Image 1: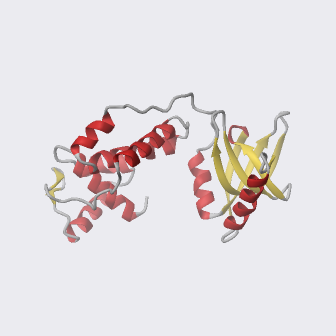
Image 2: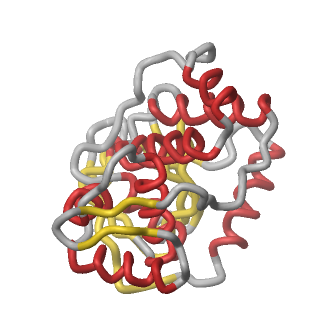
Image 3: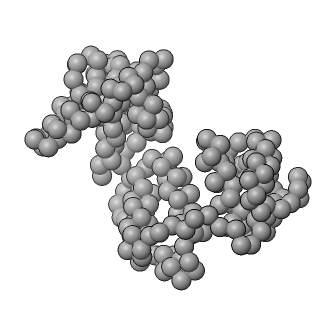
Length: 234
């Protein structure tokens, strides 16, 4: 987690807490060291964020401090909350954790009447999670997509035959039954779809395709616009 994101998370944790929160508790939630939290608290205090407390006792955020408000209408907020519920059934554990974090941030930022309305649970996303890979997390794939980093995978086709592929990951499609990875395949020299649950190994290469991702995605989306099968199966 980048420092800027971590500082924001610390403010949210303190804002939503009714009592003092220890550095250890914050560190556990953010999966960092206690020493990092001490440094972050000091940095926030230096920026005049009104955090009070000390090591060993815990920290509180003095009333009156707030981040810029989220300028969403009721309908926009409901749309976000429904989208978060859909992420909750995606089966992607890291996205599910992120959805829960966003949910808490919205609850801490909106006025009390709207908060009560959102927590009354009038909108639902239903269905069973799709099949997911068992040997790796999709968070690793999303990171490779963002960083435009080459992946090496072992892929089992619908006949059970395994092939070794080197790919440039471009996008993830979350279907009801599965999650498909869209990628440029160096073996086929074309864009292919890979069902994530058929990938038995996923390793990051020390190679990147910086600046090429947008071009390949544009090629893929143009194909999507002209046919119902924008990329052939792997």
